[in-house]
Image 1 (cartoon, rainbow, N blue to C red):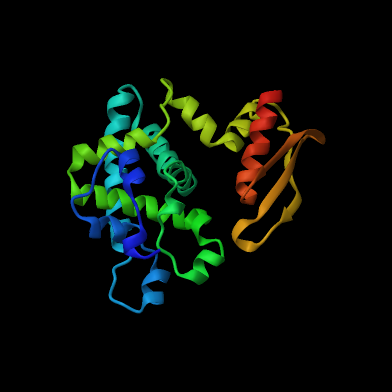
Image 2 (image 1 turned 135 degrees about the vertical axis):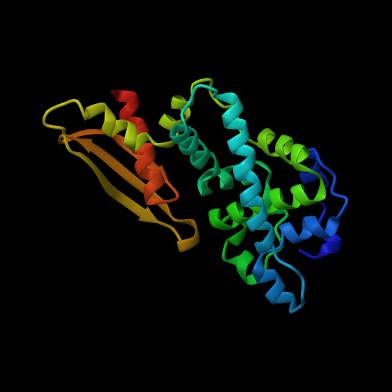
Length: 231
């Protein structure tokens, strides 16, 4: 997209912040392929991504520290990791419809870059970095936390949701012998940038359901969630 045609009003409304520096916002939305395509010195989002990653880590650490005063450091660190991981950030980016605002080269857009999870994750971090530079820490924290779903009162519920395979393994650890858990890939189809996977889970030879996802790992996690429901 060209600068003059990129209307970011809805995005800024969703963030609750109108950027004083439009250049900063546009930089956060500029993929490296766009810079190469226009053959200019236009900045891309990579430096802002670095800053946004650090700002997000601090925001989540402070929020978790305040929200869960009885939890130990290790548990808080696990929760922060779950909330800052790539799949979480790409989901937040989809909620903000960031793919509508990305500046990509025609080739990258044609290849499906606007919906690629890794690009959405990077853009989300860059946007947080831009927010931090254009406003202040408190405003950035408010905007960022508003993007997240409401966290559960019990942090273990968050971790269970984020690590269903681990939770499933824990369920059987007291049994002797521990029954084998097998994840069987049934299907992998679609172009490289938009593959779909289907996985079936078996526990001690018994079928406990299926799970699908945009990666094998995600499909296995969804299969584990299905098994946990049955157990």
